[in-house]
Image 1 (cartoon, one colour):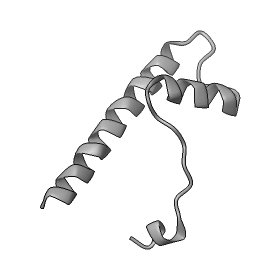
Image 2 (image 1 turned 135 degrees about the horizontal axis):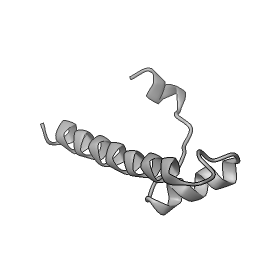
Image 3 (image 1 turned 90 degrees about the horizontal axis):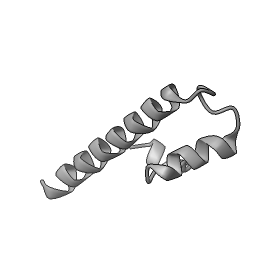
Length: 60
């Protein structure tokens, strides 16, 4: 099933990028972000963003 494989690959890429962003945050002298803007900037640096899930998406 190509769609399932594509979704799995996307999830693995998101996990990889999030892991890298968290590693970078852990190495920071300031520690984890203390503001939303800082967190968004760190995520953006790794090609990630925050998004709201839709109610339809929550149902599966």
